[in-house]
Amino acid sequence: MIHFANPIYFILLVVPVAMVVWYVMQHRTLQAGMQISTVHPFSELPVGWRVKLRHLPFIFRVITVLLMILILARPQSSNSWRNTSTEGIDIMMTLDISSSMLARDFKPNRIEAAKEVASTFISGRPSDNIGLVVFSGESFTQCPLTTDHAVLLNLFSGIQSGMLEDGTAIGLGLANSVSRLKESKAKSKVIILLTDGSNNMGNIAPITAAEIAKTFGIRVYTIGVGTQGMAPYPVQTPYGIRYQNMPVEIDEGILKRIASMTGGSYFRATGNSKLKEIYNEIDQLEKTKLNVQEVNKKHEEYLLLAWIAFFFLLSELLMRYFVLRKIP
Image 1 (tube, rainbow, N blue to C red):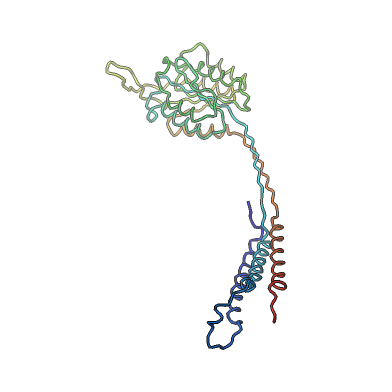
Image 2 (cartoon, one colour; image 1 turned 60 degrees about the vertical axis):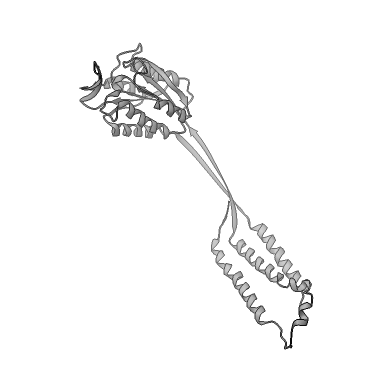
């Protein structure tokens, strides 16, 4: 990359322009003349090579002046290096997909709202390994830790309630996520567990799973999803699925203990906007560490121009005083 340290000297470009104008005007007025009846006899005379080259010394002088102006402007090249080191974070998204996640206190429902916000969260963290565990009455890994977030988001979009036996096995979902992170070599290991109920299934207690997470240095952020009071839950009736207002029951005590034990935090999401705020807060708490070192080295590039200017100046002198020498 070339730039100029003293670009103000480019104002001197008016000098070669003035030189050209002066040269043209001079040659119009300083031609020798004589009166003759006709110039026809001279039209057949050959034109010598010296006549053809008579303007060459002036052209060399203009080029020399242009090069001198460029030298005064100090052309410089620069080399830049940018060394970036990233301290990645391994994150397991642990999502409740039980039938209660179809409640419509969120728009369009809890599970779709959670998927939308979590997808935005994933898209904003391109340097991190992120995986996905889903649970209801049982649990399985929808996507292991990966930096291929396009695949992860595709699998995320396919999540729906009813994929597993119904119920809420918080301990089982948490333990599954811990098993995916325990061998991780990342500096920071995080689980984001989102649920809307109380643990009622599974053979692993939530506190036991939290103790295992703590042993492996895994922080757990827990999110309780559900409005305060009543919410429209889906209920199977002889006429199909109907929505009935039922009390929202989230075991906040367990979720708070899990977060406290592992060094994480508990959040309560009561609507779509609140859920977005929670993920934004977690995003700030778990920022990937990025160390950037920039080196910028400049080199003066005038030397080559100086040699070229010297060549044209010498060529002008040789042409003017030896090759195209004029008799006064």
